[in-house]
Amino acid sequence: MKFDILFIGLLTLTSATCEKSFNLPVCSECQKEIWKAWESPSSCGFQIHLLNDIAKKYHYTFGFAHPVFYDMTLYNKAIKEACAAEFSCTYEEDLKIWSGIENKCATELSTYIDWSANPNSFTSNDNEILRAYGSLLLFYFVIPEHNSVCHKTTNGELCGIESVKPLINWLETVAPEGNANITYDHQFVYKSDGTRLPIPKELFQCGECTTNMVQEYGTWIDQHAVPDPIVKNIFGSLEIIKMHFTCPVNI
Image (tube, rainbow, N blue to C red):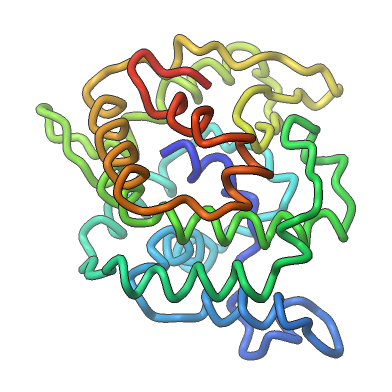
């Protein structure tokens, strides 16, 4: 569930052509591969379809420096609809998608990004790099992410809804004025005046949803090799990745 919030700022690519999506006369090979992945009707695009549904059905526009919205009504409705839809993504199908991104976006995926920086500080070139990293991350983790988001608690609530409540409640307290941006490493929040606050680890303790997420992600990582750009350039090492999916949670 962390990654839905982490990369929710990724722009939806729903135009008829790659060039229209990126607003360019000619797309690079990386951009073509990302656009192809985002446009695929495959259920492996679970998170992509979720963002697109929010944008299309509820006329919401995402940006890279996307402030967190405190009214979760539309998000919650979209989560319920996404989890009610058929999900048939297989490892083999998913591997083909993320391998294509990894191969075609080698330059972008070897570029340094400060994941703790204010999302408002990124340039348009940074955003292209973020799109490559975000797409690789979302597609590699889509199966455990779907199983985590759509897991129902004993009280019948979807974890995709339940798990974000502590974070949103905390943000409303520390940044009641709104316009708060979460860093892509989920370590900090930047208020509208530029103040940076650390996100308390206590918000991600091991309740029912987190325990299930740890199991889903841990099993996936153990069974399927994590792409090198995720290991080296997003987290830093495989050990750090595994620390993100332990109880108590280490982020």
